[in-house]
Length: 217
Image (cartoon, rainbow, N blue to C red; front, side, top):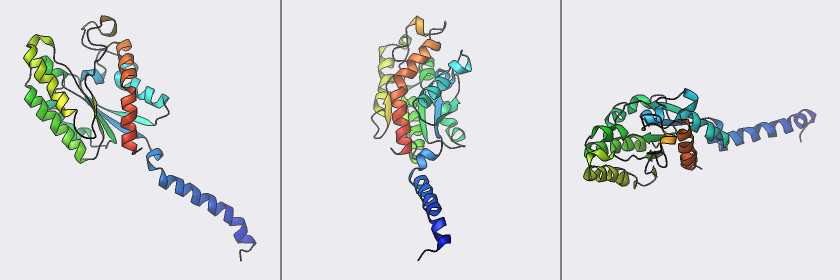
């Protein structure tokens, strides 16, 4: 038999248990999802004011969709796949729930070996997989000045890596932007603010899938 004191406490106890059960059942919603951006100048926002850079615009777009996310800046202008591989452990020091890997443009600009680029990217993807971090790999195309054979070998690297099970793959980071003067800065390499917005709009659905993978939903 519940006395007057117990009767007064019963609703409060039920409410407290309900709150605890909700928190236990919804760990993914209880904190911000951290997305590591391991990239080069294209994701570092080279030549742009900070609010116009890729990471700021993408984070705002994801939050506008009601997703509590924070993009963790590990993009370094001029970086190659070897540089990204070398600093991956440092970039992950504070933890990450998911990762966007955008590297390869500088390998292509310098005419570096596609085989070495593949080894570097594979090592990055292996390290992230070992930590059970979902990945969106965004590919790159080589500039035409090194010839058709180099361009084909370069593209094949991303095509092969993109077939890894569980990996989200975007074949070309600058899709719809490369070569369009209206969407690029005067160097004709880096997107301008309009180009960044176009880029973010195209990649947003895949980034939403990456967040879902990180949350196990």
